[in-house]
Length: 90
Image 1: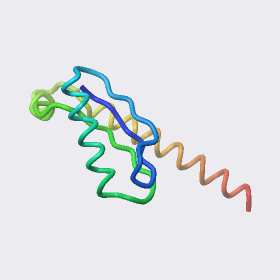
Image 2: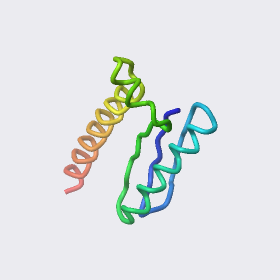
Image 3: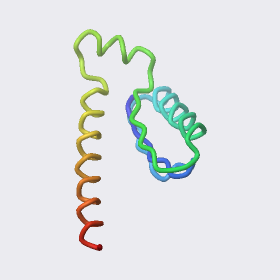
């Protein structure tokens, strides 16, 4: 089960979790724990809900690394566009 949650100022703005019910619940709980630590700003959590995800990845399978890389690239592109748009406003 993998998913993500966007958190703004400690509150869930949007989330999408897929997979088994148990995995979704674990992934959501982990994301909420992160939101309790970071109370200000905007946070994106990308999680795999089951403990064995790391061992599956260690065997060469992509559980969440690929998704994390895609999210990182998309975030970098979005930030670059935001900076360009802000520069135009000056």
